[in-house]
Length: 219
Ligand code: DC
Image (cartoon, rainbow, N blue to C red; front, side):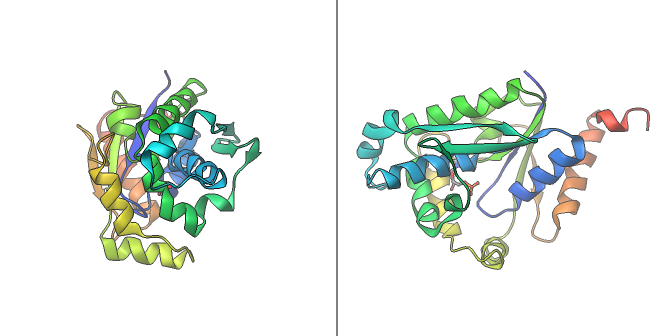
């Protein structure tokens, strides 16, 4: 398996932007694991299945054609043979995604797909259970937090309708792979930091732990 940096945290904590910037800096792949759960959610909604009905979601899970891969250093997801884009962040997807993501069989499929990305090269993956479940042996684990007010206003600034607090409640209280700080993870509060500030904090921790980036060798 290649090197993995696992980044977890609550909704709108900035982890996606941070993970993308960090991956670009290192020349590693970037994987947004939430997109996989969003793709499953979109497929559930297209299917006409009620996302709040856990057994109904479980019953159709095996038929949902959700695939993914890497291109130009970033992960992509597809459902029913078509790559997904803006529909992943649609208000109806935001409303339903935590409900679909709590279903164990959906999580099994997502985790399998996500682990596969580590065969292609070193990567930065962000989500809710990357350091706890997907890559518990990852050498580098971070948990990025921010106050609820800051997170809500970040989403609003993106022009997105998102029930951040409600998603956190469901994501943290579910039975399977709840949002939690992984053993050994470094917690970074991003409330008063911009993206570069968080990336710098992550790289400082890694360098202090003996990490030398390929481009930085001998520097
Ligand atoms: O990171 P995001 O906001 O795009 O994630 C959307 C939802 O997907 C999140 O509310 C819960 C679920 N999710 C998850 O359960 N596990 C992950 N590793 C990533 C996301």
